[in-house]
Image 1 (tube, rainbow, N blue to C red):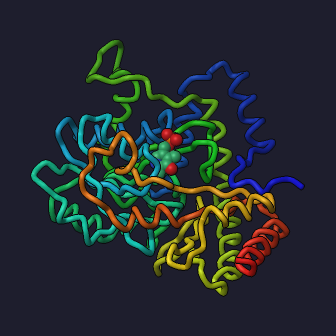
Image 2: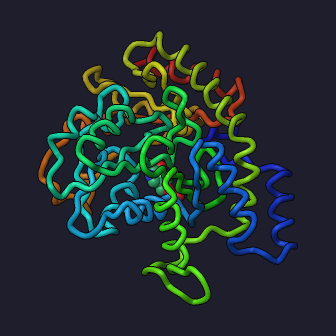
Image 3: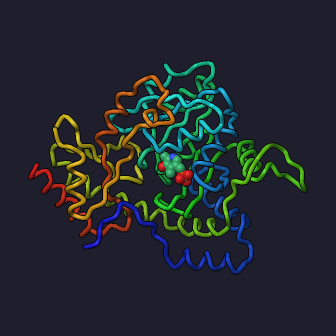
Length: 366
Ligand SMILES: *Cc1c(COP(=O)(O)O)cnc(C)c1O
């Protein structure tokens, strides 16, 4: 029996053909394909500009630089994310200031942001975790009141929506990743969305050694470019993204309907008016119910169902950030209780039935 994996990139004939065309064209580095991809992605998100870069971590770093974050500034963010979120802040020389998460959505808790704002604060960097948008209405309101920039980490949330506005269009800048496990992929890759010409122009300079015209260097930049091979894959993946998302949503719905009737497990919560794109389908096994996550994972393993923990250690408790003195009790608790099960678009109905049956039998015997 084959293992039901957590993520598998879905690449078809279309991507193969596109890559071969780029290889035969001779234009492998950033060129026309990248421009087409940027235009398509900006249209998809609903922003005026999109600038493609080498990966999602670099997208965050360049977005921070473009809004003016520098050494000794502070940037408010969540401790419950992939470490790249905080590392991008650190790379600019600024300090990440962590704000605890909301217990239901697992995204940054807007009610706790203002108490962490100081004269050094320059920006707020929320993460749309697992594909669920952070509370952007509340966050952008606070940012406006205090004159702060907002950078969205949308690395897990391609196409997620609040109301009728997609993530990546709410803040000053949105950052996406096309890493192999994300909802759409270019192998490695990233893109920055914005409505502001000044920011788009600055990021274009930063990603290409500050090069403007014939050997005039406007500013200190470096090489953060996307290749046209990656962009050609991205164009085909973006065309398929609506279908990928539809399958993820259908799978998540089927799982939630089956699991919600079982005690002792919390299914993902979706606030009214929000569209979750289910990069991960993450359940929570409440520690107070005395069901250990390790036992759950072992039981899934025995049935050949992959699981993942995102994230077992909140960022402020990792080695690099352990100087952070304050505690963030919700993130610390939730990180011990979450576990992600497969939701990828290529799951069959049979796969989902197996997953549900495995969980049901685990609870029946525990
Ligand atoms: C994947 C991811 C990143 C980094 O993207 P890469 O393309 O892997 O560099 C940043 N933030 C979050 C939340 C991510 O999931």
